[in-house]
Image (cartoon, rainbow, N blue to C red; front, side):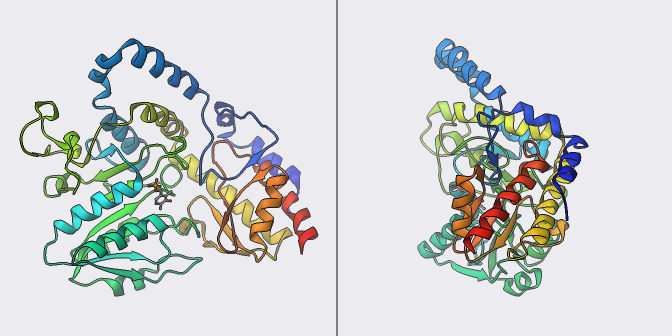
Length: 402
Ligand SMILES: *Cc1c(COP(=O)(O)O)cnc(C)c1O
């Protein structure tokens, strides 16, 4: 049995403990374990927001476009270098994850004429499945769904069975939003490439908490949102990655002026930039991108290896506390840390009620239909003692409602 003093000792020895002070925490009594949905904002963001409003917008007016114009690329390079293992010129900020999934899946499909199948898994995040479904509904494309396990995610053998020389694109999440199951990026890239298809990764639940090596693993294409662990704020702009060697061969379906070689020439025909900018559509969201920067910087400063180490200790503690005190919670995530992202899910028939009762007692976790609770602690602002306190309250609730 783990007692509270043990959790407090883990905090005292935590090399990342000081980072908590960087965040705006107006409610120190609230235990927030939903970094996997929306991270807390950083204090430095106040100053950046003031600066972009006063100096750049009010002061610089339209003249500020001289440095705003390539912010999407600069921020992409920062994210790529700091957290995604991508060399410059391959990551860019734009649009939403949903739109970017559509753009890159269509680009890949169009580049594989003669192949007509798009593959994803039946446990993938809803928007990822719908985008694939929508693509299949509008053309002579077929959607092939791989059956995934609700607790352990996509099995590599099942994926292999779905691949043949009709497959143009495979679209999967690196970390499953429900189970937290973590795929082996390099192994899946190899499998998909051997079948002659392109691989599109969704990094939304992985970026900033799991070491990622897009270049080193031979990844083709990737997308992701920035409002979860990356801390970009609600509705923050998404990003996309296209491996440099593929950029000129791929054309995305939304031909906008920001993908054009010389957008301000307003020329008669679309002639896309050879580089990553061809995957842009329209005007970049300058204020949102300004706000998205500090969340990336703070994770890169802490270092992804240190972040991953603490994240694993946090999820291990959650699993141990559940085993100790709440055996009626059935773990619904991979038991092996190597195969798990940064969140942990449990199944319980009273899941919805537990989450509501916890919220009444100042603990925020996530509820997933129909019977799962999800803990998404932050490696930078969650304390081990917070996790212990959350379980203590959950224990009391469980005694009352069951
Ligand atoms: C959060 C998330 C999204 C979000 O897509 P939006 O277009 O930003 O709404 C997409 N895919 C996955 C896997 C996610 O976790």
